[in-house]
Length: 90
Image (tube, rainbow, N blue to C red; front, side, top):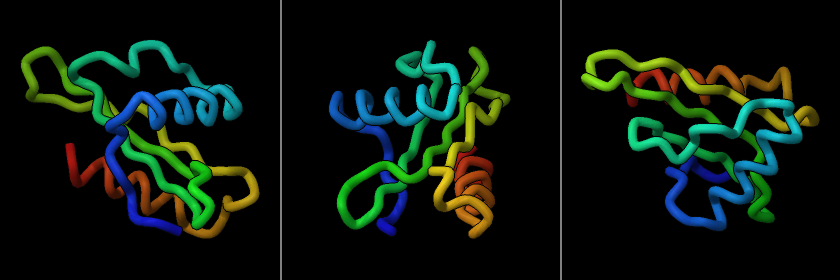
């Protein structure tokens, strides 16, 4: 696994949309200015997990946006790691 990286490009955004849609999670609002997103990739560059949060308009509160893990990698602690990252960044 690679380190978490911030979603920074259109290619990341498109890949994340596909990953979240496959997990039946909403993709609306991902480009809102208060949304921060990170992705985890495997050695082949495929997204294996994602997390993020959404800041309130005043920036004083954050809502964890989602934590998603590739079904083949569940129960290995990746989801917990992703959630802790989002909480630490919020």
